[in-house]
Length: 164
Image 1 (tube, rainbow, N blue to C red):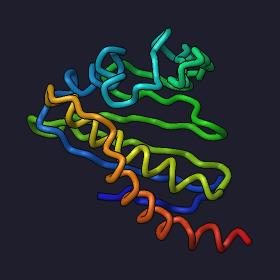
Image 2 (image 1 turned 180 degrees about the horizontal axis):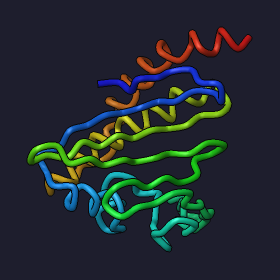
Image 3 (image 1 turned 180 degrees about the vertical axis):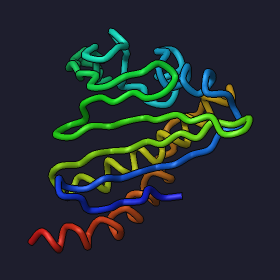
Image 4 (image 1 turned 90 degrees about the horizontal axis):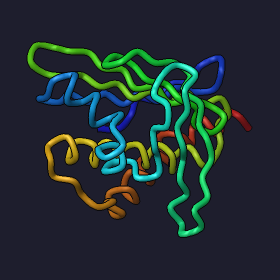
């Protein structure tokens, strides 16, 4: 299930929605606890989990290089928003019956050719997230990413053509 992508006054917004047969507490811990977070997004590391706190994006390329990411908004077991390039990414959790709905929203102020790669990456991260949540971590599925990348190119290209 691809993200819904819509043009906004400030660029575009991509929204991924997933429903998990898990509690908000379980989903939240998979999102924010470093040992679980790195099973689905190995570059991210939580340093100070709070509004105006920080995270690190580790390059994981053998150089030891990393950079800080600011946490823009936060409420435990509810939402978490942080810088992502020129924009931001926000995770929102909502309990529904005995399940948890997760919304991942990427706010993209500047449309460019990199966006399909980024969205394909989040798509795959959500597949890896589900596997981690179920206690069955998986390796990065490159073929899945490539298929999603092509799908997002088709989805984003009309927006890019409007910009020209």
